[in-house]
View 1 (spheres, helix red, strand yellow):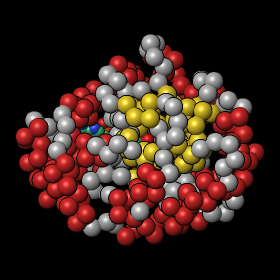
View 2 (cartoon, helix red, strand yellow):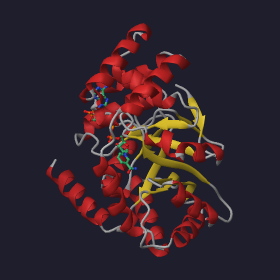
View 3 (tube, protein in one colour):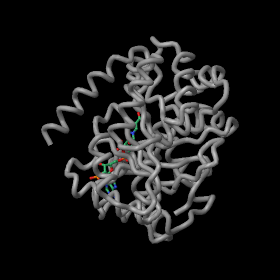
Amino acid sequence: MKYKILGGSNTKFSEIGLGTWKFNPNLEEASKTAKYMFENGVNFLDTAEMYQNESRLGIMLKEMKIEDEPFIATKVSPNNLHYNDIIRSCNESLSKLGVKQITLYQIHWPNHRINIRETINAMEHLVEEGKIRYIGVSNFDQKELEEALSYLKSYKIVSNQVEYSVAFNEIENSGLMDFCNKNKISIIAYSPIGRGMVENYKYLYNELHEIGIKYNATALQVALKYIISNKNVIAIPKVSSIEHAKEILGTEKFDISKSDINRIKDIADKIKKPLAGKILNKILKANGCWSGIMERHERLRMERD
Ligand SMILES: NC(=O)c1ccc[n+]([C@@H]2O[C@H](COP(=O)([O-])OP(=O)(O)OC[C@H]3O[C@@H](n4cnc5c(N)ncnc54)[C@H](OP(=O)(O)O)[C@@H]3O)[C@@H](O)[C@H]2O)c1
């Protein structure tokens, strides 16, 4: 497993972490998969207040009894970005996860109804208090990041968690990736294997499959390799079984040539990006209330499962 320093921090994160949105509701299977990944070099997991699974993950981590505790990355919901709400959310996450410190605390989405200065002040206070080690953001575009950076007094923003895969490589061309590189902000790629649906992009899939033959790798492994071959990027695929975990971790077993990276980029650039995503993004950012609906939805789903 390769490890990368996150942003301007001094902590090495595995370039593949474990995403847990809609993580296997069967705690025993989830635990086996997570343990397998941690024993094979993965050193962090990503969750969020909105996923409504922090308590379950806390139980899972406690029962797992692994030598090196993984780093925990979680996120505060966009409806909780006022100062006092963040402090309360952070305390709740700490208690649910059963840890003394959250390694990376991320602002899940910008909420344009709440002044980001207030949010950043609260995040810095949490670092000061030792409740979180690093500050991260998620779904921030360059303008939103610039504004957030301008309010920092003592600490850094070490990462921006954004959607990034061969099927959705917008950050490469929007300037966001360059901006993050210049400012020593790591990219945490979410949905890095295209929500497991790379196969739906027939032309892309065929090309990835063909490239994979010479590396003895699958199309999915080539897709993930493309993302993490960038030195400022780590990825958090969601994996619910050991079988899937083995394929994901197999991505570490080969190197990919620069010419194949360029070939994949050419194909990725040609994929039509859904316009609905852009419009939805705007609506979500303009109004943090939707996360309350998401949280309720997730809670009901977890209770049902
Ligand atoms: N910050 C944000 O706003 C945000 C938004 C979305 C996601 N995220 C984070 O990113 C994580 C990952 O994103 P994601 O879940 O949307 O998409 P993803 O990781 O790209 O894809 C997950 C899907 O791929 C499947 N998969 C995994 N390994 C596979 C394999 N070897 N073969 C075939 N299918 C495989 C999974 O199935 P199984 O589960 O059955 O293994 C799951 O259906 C989330 O869990 C969450 O932590 C963050």
